[in-house]
Image 1: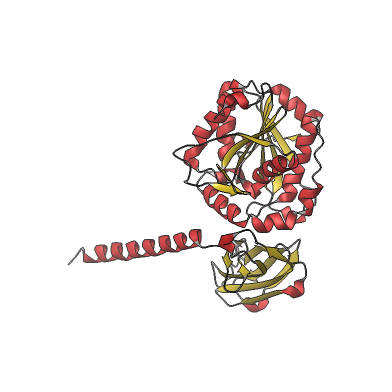
Image 2: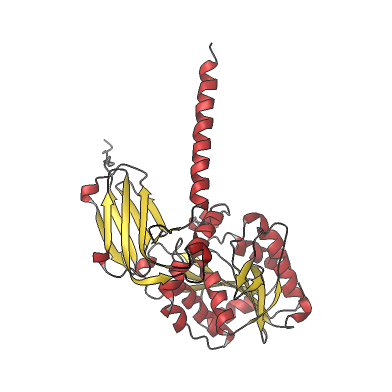
Length: 241
Length: 143
């Protein structure tokens, strides 16, 4: 990875395959919308032997794209549990090296009544108090009680240890189907947080196509989530009682 | 002679585990389309309550209930649905560089159901089928 090609003091946005593929859909949309250039890729012997071709160009499935001071991390494959910690360490060392202003993760939180929800609500959590204030200022409700499990929990834990300015945006989502509507809600919250206009209409117009074409990634992600303690997100924490 | 039944039981359990693993493997590596019949396989989930088995299927591009055909027995449901628009995979060699306009899915149920009493609804391209269980649970009063 060429750290030199990444903007100093930028914002790192992470959108990985997780609940409802909210993060993956969001990062893919940001890269396409802002024509973000690929600046680096991440590789590891623990990653599956996969290469992806886009318009004849070979690409690694886990990549960093950048535009101005924004960096987006995208993965076109599910992150397996044995890759969580190494990936979390790599991301946090990257955040430290470029002295990023914020690391913002985008994900979904399973809502059992998602079918009845027209506009999914977005919850936010942050490591530092100043970022919690920032979330409140832009009207994002704080995630008060509950578990966060999976790859984002590993990244947040590393950020907690190093006191890094990490934020996570979690949109109410379908657990087992790709949810572009939830991604649109999360991107609207991101737009307020960054003070940058993001038009999510094209994402909503393509909703059915995205749901249909991301079935395989969703199925593989659900299988990997089963092995990553994701069921904890449905549990009530001990201290809540 | 005394311990033979234990080994017999272990052999049977071993066979059962192998069969389950083979099924999981087949399910994991099976493509989500049937090129021969130009059918896509939709994502689905099955939920079980004490009274019902609830099947939910994601059917993007299926907008009219008339385009959905559901057949059910005590053990399984078969769903066929026609899309309002064709899904194009013209750049994807593995999908046969063609278009698909149907979904088909056969789902094995976790408990026997009374198929005749099942109800279904289509909302936002998500099909929900509620199938009452054949062996329902009854509340017993504590005296």
